Length: 141
Image (cartoon, rainbow, N blue to C red; front, side, top):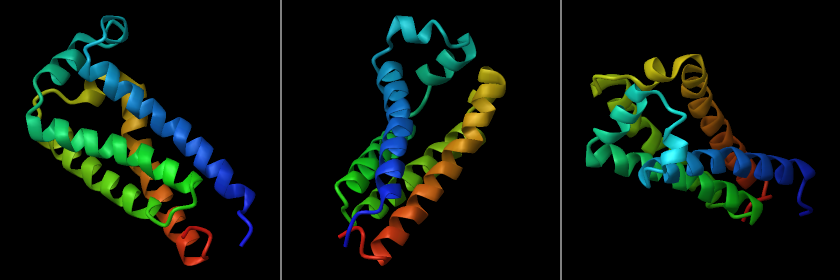
């Protein structure tokens, strides 16, 4: 089956989108001073006080999203599974971010953080649905 052009578009756009999350993760975990200088003090405090299980869930969410995008571009049926695992990581990390943490990141980050807090799960769910649909159609194998 010929690869539809939309697969390449979705794959590249999702890789760029998810690379933004990977960049944020790496800069935050390596405590890059230039990057962190752009964040409010409350956000830095939040990042410095997260439990290990949050960090693990965040890593799973970020890196499985990047992997899912790459697997889309490689036309692998495992893309859907990667996006599903990323979604699990996002859900688990969100339990801390929006339920258990004293400081909410969207409160510290303002409107932009709130928009990303809404957009990230929507985009991830749509990518998971897309990858599953492409697998059912035989585009991913």
